[in-house]
Length: 273
Ligand code: GLN
Image (spheres, rainbow, N blue to C red):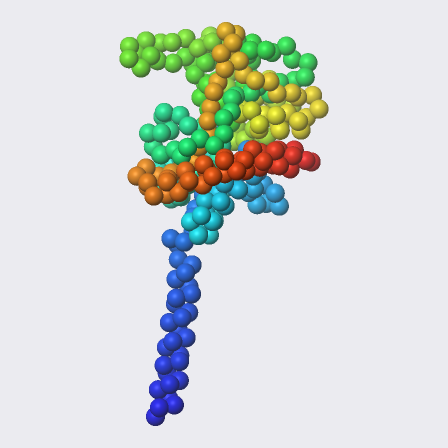
């Protein structure tokens, strides 16, 4: 009878609308961002949730795409492989653009510049990287600070001639210890396991501020030269559409002064306590 047919049709319609609803939540509508939430003010945990300048950038990109943001908090040195393998959509973690990294991922436009810093004791006489001769140096594993210190201790090879280029710390007895975060490295500096920590400027200043007897100074060479870095968002190679959207959002945020504003806000926030 017709009543039965109508009720069957109603049930069918109901089931179909439920499918439609659940398919709205299908995976393509989630933007997966990989980070390492141990790098304030760019990313740090607040109530166990990753927050910070980069997380606000991530949210702005997700909003632009009309997608739900999912953040994966992982070790820094695994982020780029997760992006190049397609496991995650974006890597946003204060990632410095380097030619080597640009071989495995595409980088967006730069959104901030930085330099390396040295966290030292207040009464330390250290002024230049050459002053780290013979010292125990703590770094964060797989970061540019790690690369610079490791290269200065081991020396490098001239790409064309293969000739050995002596590092400024080579043969001085200086050693490098790699930690998973600047905070970890600082704890080990406090207990005397390392003498100094080398890490990016703002994280260095924040971590130094957490110890009464630590300060942070810029890493300079005796000849006055400095490191010079820019952060960008990592996107899987070939994903031009996503890269274009990321660039559009970054340019807008820079123009609106949002990034500078967030840096100030999150520096204050993450320095508390
Ligand atoms: N900017 C540094 C790098 O890319 C450190 C980044 C970080 O520790 N999150 O290596």
